[in-house]
Image (tube, rainbow, N blue to C red; front, side):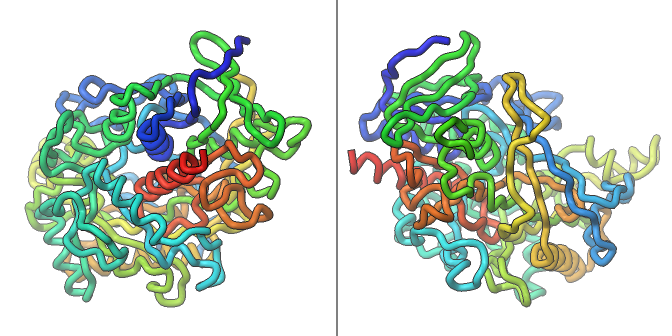
Length: 553
């Protein structure tokens, strides 16, 4: 094993939303930065297949681009919630067992992280969701307020190039979005009629997708392939925004395919370095400042795997909260085949959204809000292959005729809701399963309590009611997280707070004990919000954390 003094002012572990924003902010302050990620680097113009014959495939996998994790036993399903089972009219029940099954944590490891395959949603967190403990007696309050984040939201929106509606009544703004909202697709305009008949709003979504070109990034062509990787680079993924600008400064070095084995604790309650493994072997990299941004699964895993004689429960785990308070994606989707030729395979994946139930007390009898949005692309129904598998029954010439008559007519509506921490949801180390370096994998435990199930039921019933108001046929497919764990956004396993006794980091994203250790990913969220996509909030938190760090230096 080699060891060398670091030539960098800071080392960042994880090149997703939070790590990328931290790298950009540090280089702006003149710091030299090493940005590491266990995954590979993607070349948008080579690796993404939107212009190729096999464009319908999933986001491309490369060596190391998917992390490994395991699951504890998931809960037994209750017959009282049978209407929340996942099914398809061709395939039948998607989970035939009597327990929830793990479909997986949908993420990407690599330079850019999961922003490489996100849909571009750029949301601010509802201010009321930041005070759930004091106002509603659940979860935990954020140790900072919305007003303290607002300047950093603006900064991130400008760099990403966010397009959004003229008014944002949910989250007060001191300045308009950088670009006006994108025009909505025909399918979304039709769905808006259904929401209006229910007395609900369905407005343009705020998206980090360029309506007009910038240097190195083209304007969006509305192909709908955001989830599969954007070769035009109009989508504001972290690699073509924060990281590209950080590299241009000449003060940032990126190192993909580099696995951090453990964090090394030094004297005087400071991190001294990290032990890494790459193609050249095993190295100890010393650092004056460590920014940890590996996500709400891998960040607690790394801290727990860094236990030593002085920290037997894991690093930065003085409170015992590392891995606790895990919050997942609570979601529901209903899909129907419309009688109208809508061309629903075209357009931005999530161009419209309903925020009417986003407030924590907006759902009757339930604490924790939700949002609704169009989701044809997220259901992977923008091409004929999945139509043939899931939408149109049969085979042969009749099947071909039905395909021609049906393609582009799917309407998809999804709800995403608040996920509240509970004792049955947490991340720990698997006692049996290890990675290729002999380190225990992260093990995910998930429990949906009664409040979560009622919130999920509300989302399912609302989706069905919207379609009924349009006088559409019943759904041909419905699926959700009641019977299948399938998360794209995870939170809370190193949550922030004022007290060292019940949190891992403070309001500046610093460890309460290890003052040169910052965490800037979704693991620090005290609450998940009522369906907001978290990347913009992660970036705003990272920008603020670096500002506070550099002001104190």
